[in-house]
Length: 226
Image (cartoon, rainbow, N blue to C red; front, side, top):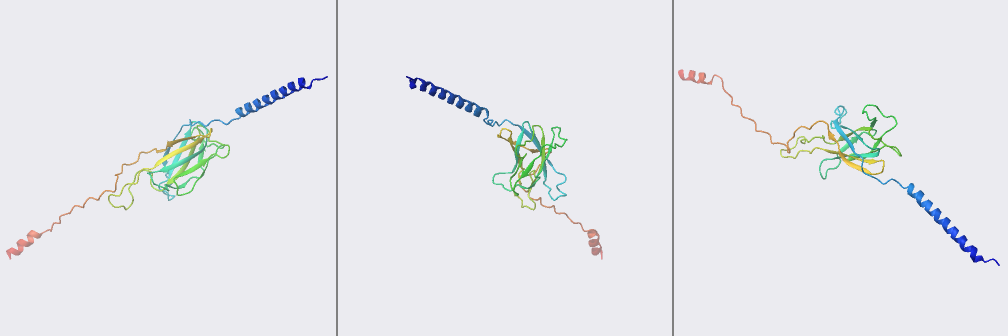
């Protein structure tokens, strides 16, 4: 007579081994498909320059920025600050910055940047589009329009003793290809700012000028002789 128990046990053992093998395969596949751990290792550098066309366009404080990174980035933010509590430091920006090859001259037709944000605000957010990047070494060139001059300045028509408007602090924060954020990186004006006092100075008193009357002595002498 056939002993069923002798055959059932081996069959269950085979199914168990098969299930374990499938599970291990699924885990191995999941491990290989796991997303890359974000690493904030991307370094960026750039600068600012006064836009010569700003005054004619009614934007005398207009600044151009340019920067590049040593790794691919998918998005970036330009932040403008002056001191704690300040808000609304930008009132305009370029929504479509240019992308140049690493030579800093040749336009890159394959990559583009779009910027969005509210105004006035303290920054503008830009991105390369879904699934796209600004490649390592390529440059982004755009513009922002601060409400006040970038350099330290004195308020117009302010009373003596009024504090000067501090120099702007412009910084860049990027999102790299791993999904990590890198920065902030300082963007400084390529030309040194002029020296400005910390407060509006008190005007120097005007010197009194002495007026001389011509011929006064001769007139008196003539009257005496008469």
